[in-house]
Image (cartoon, rainbow over all chains, first blue to last red; front, side, top):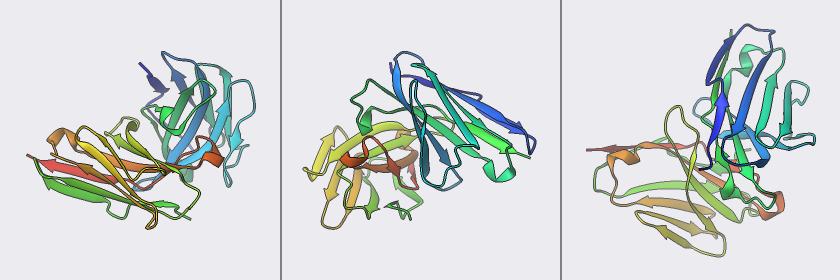
Length: 118
Length: 113
């Protein structure tokens, strides 16, 4: 149980285009989903926290107009990288947490999406 | 400002020996610590955790030690197995921040047969 999927697993796009990444909880309802970004040899950095049906909460320094997050259902959250540039190339990972009383160890991570912007 | 640091990017040990992975933190508000294991092309999977009210937590071959005064935690794996080869991340959270996790950079563990 507690499987989280991401699609696509990798994507290459041209500079200036937008890319959408999906995060799905396959066997549980995720009230909260988190989006992380990982640059090579660096830690996972939390970008934003999204709660179903409400606006995402972005971490300091993350541009909300560039990284659009939608959490329209209890099993799906999407991250859209708008007007992507080469510096946005990174590994994007989502995690999902069931229920409302979530704790740090009840986050289940997706396999990640490798984004390369040419 | 890297609040959680894993200073060793890699560690290589022999099968059957002990693996010790270290992690340091700077934020004294952190009160819950976790270790995750990550294989290539997969997301991190939860391994073991420890609350700040304890100094040791054990689960099978995995033991996590917490030294609050030194703001240091370590993960011991004994005996190490080739299947343990992966990247290990430590992470920390603060009750005041809900379930927000702050991760270290990760340590690549290689267990040689």
